[in-house]
Image (cartoon, rainbow, N blue to C red; front, side, top):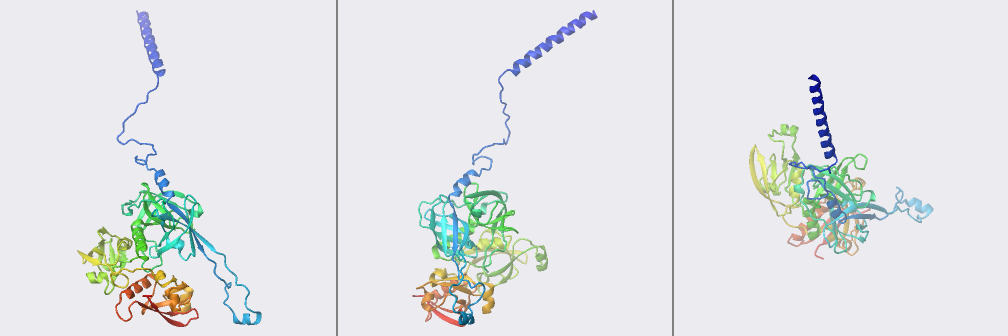
Length: 489
């Protein structure tokens, strides 16, 4: 009996094993099927820019043709190899037959085409002091550019080339940029044309104190997109192919990219470009206050209950803020309908406006919130617009004084008349090249913006001296000389 049971068991096991073998063989030799498991948020590997994956190809494709290469030429200047002309040398040896001449210098940068008829924006430092500006398109066509205007306070310049049907970039909204959002930097670093790098927005409204103007506006977009010398003036583009900033600077101890780059937001660029096109000079609106950022130490010193906002350290007499009732010790927390947490954010909001514009200011005074409507003024304390920059109107090229000039003439401010245009108002009045302009209409001239405002005020003054400009300063020989300019001619 035991033997029979063992035999039946063996037979059953053999039959089961055979069945399993046949089943497995059949399944393994059938065609394979793909089993899709639906996920709530499936990962998609695609190049479609409308999909969930970040795609850079579209933004790169539309931007490279609208970004140009700018070559600025700085003509050679006569050089005495560090020695002044010596009359004793000339008496004994005769006049030098030829003064050594430094070779011309070429600067390189980038620019962005804003309109199909040839308006191009770039950085002021790319073209500042240049004698000739060339623009090279991505298709290698080359044009001579006309300098329409510059704005050192934002480091922007506007150029114009004689061309039509040029590719352009749509203007985006830099206010909508979010920390961590992908962006592209497009430009010509180290003369490597049409270079595209990618990074994220790592901060907004960043001030890095690189501009020298007293009225500077620094509210940079900070990114980690690689930017190097030659990228200046190029495009910062979002993934939709929209222009959101103008690449301007890098934070580096070596002169090359080391992690951070900075771009001027288009919210500032658009206003500056519009002013330069319409007036030839930027219409700078001012509150007329001295301001400071707030940190924990400062808040404790001033007995403040807040760490965010802008502290009003002083209010200028007869300024827009003074007229509106803003006082020293106030903390501005909102401007133009936008929260402001820092000086750079307040500067950005006011920098979008013009003299005569009204802006809503919300502030804290003794812990209580107050709101003021402020009518902004220009640097001379009026609400009028300034038409035509000093260089264009007077016929001359003005630059800030360097340390040697300030020391030589014993002044802390003024403008150097680098070049007088033949047939211009300065030329007709007898102003020479190299004139050091200290005052205009008895007002100190600290920068070109101040001179523009003085001229604008003079053109609106009624009376016997209507539209006259009286200059005082130093001729190249060091003598104090006065000139009268008739602005009506």
